[in-house]
Image (cartoon, rainbow, N blue to C red; front, side, top):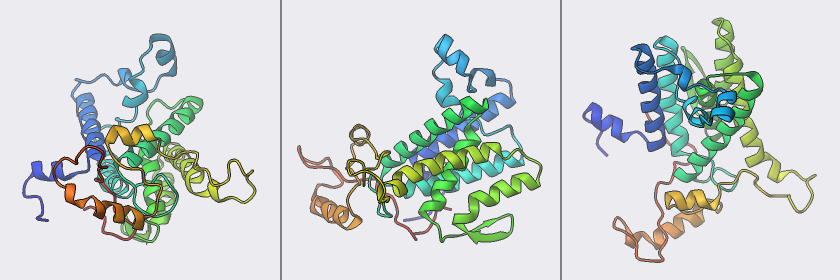
Length: 269
């Protein structure tokens, strides 16, 4: 595939969820900078959500990543790189390193965001965008643990990246709480998704059950197949229905598209 030749082509090449988040974050920051957007209407205020039914705050609180600054640019870059990296290789419905798809990515972000909102309620955090971004980086590091990354000239394996970012925040005198909240929320998702189902001490009725598996209605929303089977089985089923691409599939034929990348493939640049 040819490299994008223009800003528009580069923008359109970004994966859809990451593109929407990047666009919203840029618009909110620039709007706040020039007085067009009132941040007090967007941040997480539980009292206003319950009393005035301002439910949009449950979403818009994740759009603000800070005012224009060097840290904001770094966050936008991290969202572009690691957000897109996770979107290309999300956690599937079943545990393991096989492919997930767009529905799985939407669901994992939703679950981590819900966990982050709970923490934000108890810690009284009005802005949760940096926390969700830290959670995305944590999940990406779990999907790509042995990938080499560089953080301010320091090279390391991806699995250490989230903790290095916390240490860097401490060294620069920044508040590490937002990052720690996001890491904790993402780790809870990871624990429920990949660790808990394999524990031997669980009772039989819950053993092997993925409590945060992507629901069927999310797959129907995106018109994508479930991903709780092996990558080999998924590829075989895709090959079976390859004749239906790229046009619309006949009635009754499942559509398989938007699959993520497996561990070890190149990250987006």
